[in-house]
Every structure is written in C-alpha cells, then in structure tokens.
Image (cartoon, rainbow, N blue to C red; front, side, top):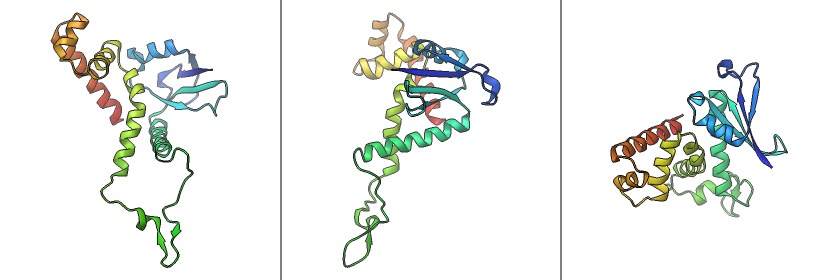
Length: 184
C-alpha cells in the first residue's frame, strides 16, 4: 500500500468548494519544500478512511488542523501510556472498607503528566516537522543533531564544503522554522 497526499487546487479556497489535487510522495515532498506550501496545513488520516492507503495527508483549514493536532497528541499519549490495556477511569471505586477512588490511590503530585504527554507527542511529529523544512535547512538540522551530533559547526561546514557562517545561518533558520511549526 502507499500513502495518499491531497492538496487544494486553490490555496485561497479556505476549505470551501474544494477541488483536490492528488500527489505522490515525491511530488508532495517537493511541494512542502517550495514556497507554495507556506501557511498551508495538512492533517494525517488513518487507513480507516481509505482502505487502499496506509496514511492520507490532506490539506485542512487552521481550525481543522488545531482540532486534529489536539486529538493526535491525545491519541499518542494514550497509545504510549496504555499500549495493550483499555481505558481506565480514575473515578472507579477501589477497595472494600473505605470507598477510595484511583485518584486518591495513585496520585503523584511530582509527576507532570501533561508535560510528558506533550513531549512524547512532539517526538512523534518531529520527523514530519523536519520534512517541512527546505533542503538546506533540513540537511543542517539532520547533520548537526542526528548524524554528527558531537561535531562542531565548523567541522560540519567543512564536510559540506561551505563556510561556517553559512552553515550556522542555515541551522539557526531551520531551528526558527521548527519553533514556528510547533507554536502553531
């Protein structure tokens, strides 16, 4: 099976009377790295929507994207927190003598569940965020933080055959783009 990529023919349609353009993976990747994709949002749908595709990336409005992202983060948290178990209510009564809820039994005020959930969700979406960068910025981030994480900027610039200032500029712009991506 393959992934499906659907974008609006008219970026200004705002999700109304949409005419779709279907792309293959390469075309979509090129589109994401072009200036044409600036300000456009995409959501990821599962195979339950279209059985002949593993995943569908579809253009969406800002409101649809925010709603999807909230649900996506929640789904990632639940999947990681309870990989094989079903949902469990913390309001369930537990114990024989005194009626205590699971809130009282397992409460740990030192744990920041929301922060951990957000961190896990961000790590799951990081590859997608990096794929939205242009080729030079994506390369700078990938080399600096994944392939040569122990090397200085100067050393990586030498590997690329460019000046250190040029590499630092690419890296910093990539980091700014990623910050903007995650603030949406």
